Length: 512
Image (cartoon, rainbow, N blue to C red; front, side):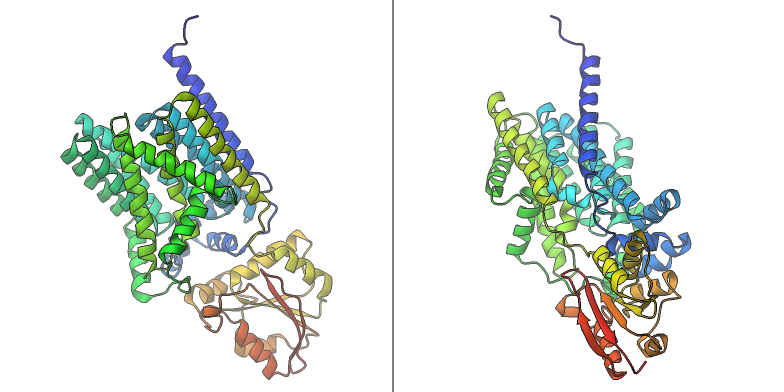
């Protein structure tokens, strides 16, 4: 029987790839609406509802994250309304479509075996699964990084062929600049991509100087596009205005655990050791197989991973970074590196090893689905207030307007609250100004609180728990000052109905 022609094989490959993308999207839709909108998603919705001039003006200067994702959230809100589910679906779609550029990179640099293996690993990667069910920037950043990795490879290929590489320069520069609009730690991703390109060029010994020129041109395009986010990030660094400055700088052990449990073998203890061993074996096989095709690309991936893995904890010593989220993009080169090594095994060994590895990653997703959530359960708090708070009561949310938005959205889904909500925001520029813009009617101060509570039968205090390191800092939390003000007015705590994720207390304040 005659074999199919190349066009038929290509069409079949794209059809199978489409099936994997659809599968990755559908599994991310499982229970995607089960959790209430949490405070970070409320920030996306709230800041995304502001006028364009504020999103790219005042908020870009006082918010720690660049405004790129808030602009995306604004567009989504204009189309689908200010809800959490549309944002989550966009994240799920971004994570699923990221398989396409990663597959294309692996097919061109490492071969078809590696392409299919890497695509399936990413489809079943539990950390990516987790982040692609959130209405936040990380899944979209992951998609842009995968596009940047493909563009970086094509820039290398153009240099090795002696071509001008204009398309690759523009593609890589656009991705680099676009990532900077989504998150400041994209700077680490861009530096790691540089390490990848330079390592591949040197290892292949082809077009090194041309490749350096093309890379400098791409970096220049990226810096030009990302100039504004870079400037805002430098202002934050000089002023020390970090929302997350309470994060302790990670040590070597903590960073290693984050990389191991988040990237290599996420969410399936105790068999994680098997996943780790197979993953390490894949990387090592690929690096030591210097005479096999694709070795420069495999060495470049190792340089990318190594440079990013070092830069994250180093940068975190002076600039707070939540490693468990921001390292997500590293899952793509890690999957490609593992797949590139395993693809060199004999066919039977390759199929057996990959089957075990994919089964373990699938088990990781199942484990994550049953994993207790660490997000705030605003639906439970709203249900409690609906059941016990009367129209004569007052609800006082402290610290963040985004907590108030989360509570309101959860309450609306249950039919609303009888008691009105007041808000006492933290004193940080982001929280105080966001409260003024997003919830002026409820916004109040410690000094004016008693007047706003006049005649209330009970006062319900609601907040998310804050780290001990900043719970006494009014720039982060007003929980303590509000309680102190109620005590000065003769108030007393009647009930503490707090959960691990949301603080709820009932007070009687006769002095107000």
